[in-house]
Image 1 (cartoon, helix red, strand yellow):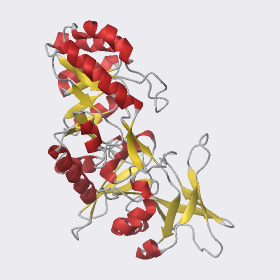
Image 2 (tube, helix red, strand yellow; image 1 turned 120 degrees about the horizontal axis):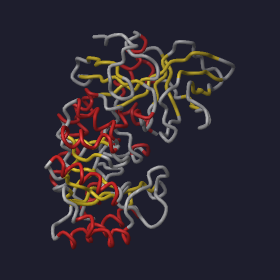
Image 3 (cartoon, helix red, strand yellow; image 1 turned 60 degrees about the vertical axis):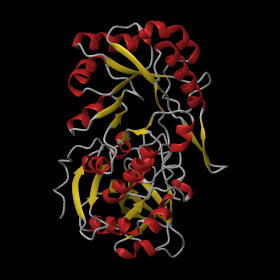
Image 4 (cartoon, one colour; image 1 turned 45 degrees about the horizontal axis):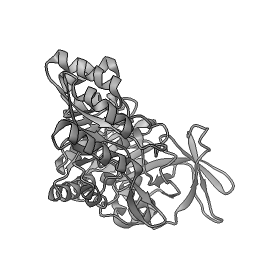
Length: 399
């Protein structure tokens, strides 16, 4: 499980999380991020990808676009980012991060296209359909700077993830490519899909998805139509363990996200080259007979949260984990429950540390970056909200 792996490979992050919370330096319902380890994970991925001639655009939504952590990723060798929607594109641009791909999981709003293309100059813009392509082409033509488009494709069957539908069917693309490639202001540069790999828990390995199969079929069509080798962008579970698979399928780029914090699906099974770099920090607010209640907020329901550690000092990493019970999905996660075994004593104000696969940008948890943890001089960065902005409701960082 994620927690046990973090305790084994990055116990110092857990211990510092307790110390910082007990000192009042970080609030409950916060994700504490070890930027030393994030940078090392990014360097590992960047080096391996370079050896395979595969480009990487990093994903930061899962860490709430935390500014200091984004800087650590770039320092590790992955310079350009992917922005899954218009808001992410703007937030990352404000940090000075070059945009590699925008609009992949959510199309850029029509009212934002001009400012994005004119001022932010993304390398690629993903379009889902001919109407979106025409809109992007019209804006780009008006600016006098063609937009390089990636065509999102989807399989004939159901999408892997509900709520992320959209894109061209392969047969549909056959008919529409002539129109797409004739649009003034639009350069059809390649294709993209999501997710391109999925983790098979039973077999304990990553496998290509139906989306990846459709992606390669679409790439062939684009290449035949344009006469140029298409860029094949293949995000989804990008990690050191999946890079060779993607290259074998002819892919050009991928988008690591959870691999940067060691919270991919394979890490949950205790494997993977990347090390754990993030913990969720909370505190107990009530103790009842056999249970304790902890402050919630920003707990992603698919995050694999199962256990937590409770304590007030460095001995927390030696304590036995307790089982976590989240409220049902129809309820807001103001709190979560800890199931206490017989004889286990905890008290109000104790620190709770857990590890899960986060999606900070969709919740209201805070983030904080911890620098220099493994060089003997840890420094806490700014407390930030779920979108990476300074949290004015919390005090300045403790030094």
